[in-house]
Image (cartoon, rainbow, N blue to C red; front, side, top):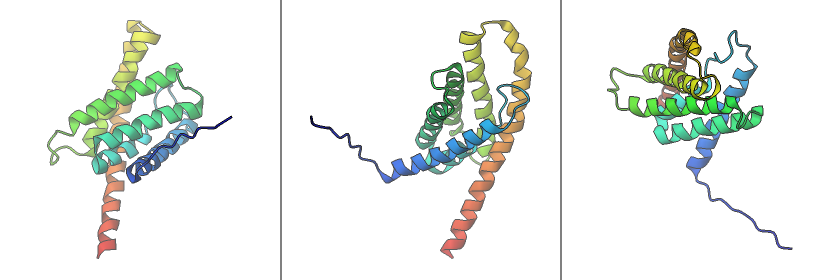
Amino acid sequence: MTSSTLKLDTTAEDHHIARLAAVALGLTVLEAAIPSPLPGVKPGLANIIVLIVLARYGWRAAAWVSLLRVVAGSLLMGSFLAPGFFLSLAGALLSLIALAASMHLPKRWFSAITHSILAAFAHITGQMLVVYLWLIPHNGIAYLLPIFAIAALVFGPVNGLAATRFMDNGDKQNLESTQ
């Protein structure tokens, strides 16, 4: 009996994206341990990493980090292909679409904070679409929209500020190390 070996050639960029996705995954696991007063309302800590990756490495790398986090997180939490997985995936996909569009906004007026707010609203939109089109096709879910909109208005700027702060600190450290 012969065994076959599957060998994947990876690049340094692949390893870098995997490390960043692992950090985002760690934040996802941490967030799952935080009790939520309302089901579905979470701060989206992993989005801080996605925002940093978007700013530093571009949309393609951010998409990889986001999608790897969703899939690996669902496998780790035991929710792969369960409704929660599809809610997370829909939110991530719409967030990525919003981030792709927001990258074309003038940088002097729009920052990681703006990107984060737009992504937060897109994420909620994706989740609500899945809920309405698949899980609970009833107009009554519209009553939840103000709660989720408030969550997006709170957590979007907070995550954007955190991403900005981490990027500013990284820039400061890089500048000091070159002097």
